[in-house]
Image (cartoon, rainbow over all chains, first blue to last red; front, top):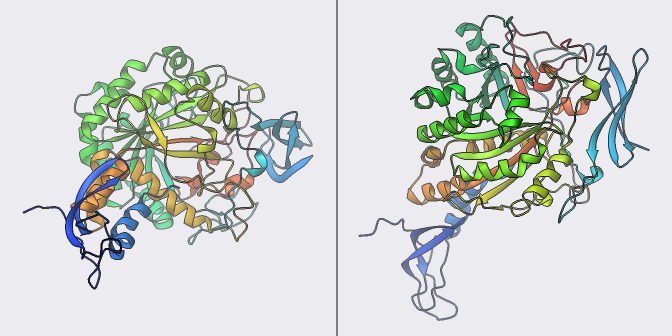
Length: 71
Length: 462
């Protein structure tokens, strides 16, 4: 079993607008400042479109960005 | 043509004088006249020539702030700035970095020394109780600001690890040591001892890439032991900032190579900080004839000497201190294998009045951002887990924090004020405060400021 963190949708079920397939929790490489890290995100199994849940974007990711803000 | 009005000091008698910023040929200069000692003009901003993008003009180099007064002023306003420090109720900025001078002894005696330290008549070191009182006063007034242990040369004290430990207990954001690096280089295990005591970062005086520059400014060749000092800090997990005092005609042509050297050291060297020399304390020139560099001179030197790394439009004025006191830029290292490479990060902060047409943000907000920025970026690269832990972290947060901080490199410059260049508006916006034995906090430049004859504005702290 992978130890990569798993971030599901905040609520509801999501479907890819292009492929009409339900999103699945799939391992996604996240790139930040040229470094990569694997996390599980809701992703279209066909085209790879990924959803970053609002809670993740506005929570953890924003917090780290804010901590590293330029002076 | 008068560009701005302020007040300054007579560099002879240190009385307060009205002063104006005016165009002087292609330069902006600060001009003032003492009824007893005549007129004085000092260059502040030069229309420097650079490759690529132009140096920002004086008029657009602004970053307005609404003053943030001290919650707990220590003195009253009696004679007015700069005579009532401090902090007095009219001081307009909170503390970003507090300085505690733990000794005025030094194991070098550099021809250029802001503190005039290392002479035969250095006062006795402050006791641990005295240092504790200064830390308490700093914490009371300035909360969890960053702390720099300074001097003199702090490493001449055998109890420095204990002082670092006490400082850590006060909860300061970043604990940094201002040092010449001699002891770090020569004593096996010393860097580890300081790191274990709670030190985060070393503010390592490093003026250039040739021993000629070190001989001129430090009286001896230093390159070899400075390299050893960085290596020792790297092994101990301490962040290092190289700090260059730059004097026209001595070492300003080495800035590009110094930047490349800083990058070659790898991520333990967190940044290069450039200080165009101010003339107080000890220096081998007459004040009026001292070889001055302005901030645009430093911008131009970096841009012209390292065009593959730096452009002048990377630089922005500070959110924390007054805009004429510093500039900085933050980069991401593009190579982690020792070849010098970096690219600018983020959006340049607005330095144009049209962009900042709304009410200026509170100065304290800039101080908060600068404290946090400095604490994160100047720490050693082994400290990200602490950051992640502070966020209640999982592995993804640790990754974000590490990728964010580890690869970053800061390039910054701070122009101190001496008796010729002092501007009370800059002093009121100062965020670097020296904690004195009597509980006062005094802006760094005023604490060190001397007249042309070496008379101190504020007496030596004993």
